[in-house]
Image (cartoon, chains in turn red, green):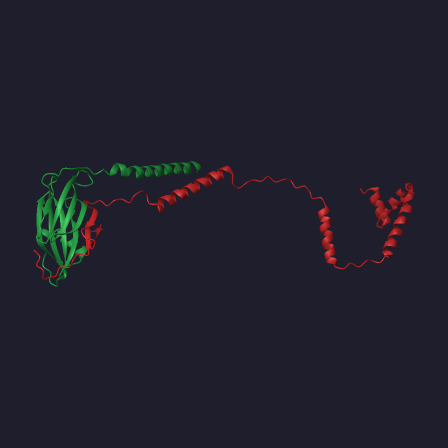
Length: 168
Length: 169
């Protein structure tokens, strides 16, 4: 059911027709000021229509600015506050930590050799502790060949012995 | 799932710590400190002077060099090995010994027995090598029975003089 003001507005605008118009005009008998109000509204409408319409340059910009201003002044509807739930819940943190630890342990065991390399089991036991060449012209070094289990003291700078020299 | 992961973590952690502990402790336990003591009775030191040469028709090495020939060939690369001389002396820790395997090469030896399991009855030897009265090398070496020491000496003709030392039991 429309209110009296709504029906009055529709009547002034000439939008009431048929039984609605007849019923409202009966009702207007108790509102003598309604006819004067209608006449005034129509006069104002005619006056406005008679005015020249100002031309707006940059219509799109004007419309854009207008819509932005309307949007800024229109109070936003209060949205229900969503409960923020962090991805990193405690169980996930624990699981992530455990996964990191597992990866670290895996890398430790695969990439870092555990302790000292195992010694070859061999009965060979020959080790040169120190070397002192008997002459500055002589140099000495030790070579160990684990494949053959051989320790060699390698002397360089010794005098060549000609084949004519008889070794005894 | 979580219990399984936690259990796995605990097992891995315990294993890692146990291995680390073993690594840290093992050297102090497993490596005995060598102790020098008097020579064992009956141990001898054998020394030989060898001439290594290349020959198209190499002679067979003498039986004294039988156990060394293969290794000598691999290390020095010559095809023929002749024994110039050799000598065996009883190891005496009370005094210095002279080993004279040849008239041109000899050595003075002072030995101390090492009584550690790792040394396998070996000796700490103080060695002085001479070539015709000229001292060419002094050395301190640990030797055990069956573990020879090769000394690459001077070149001779187209060959090489090699001195071999080995403790014998």
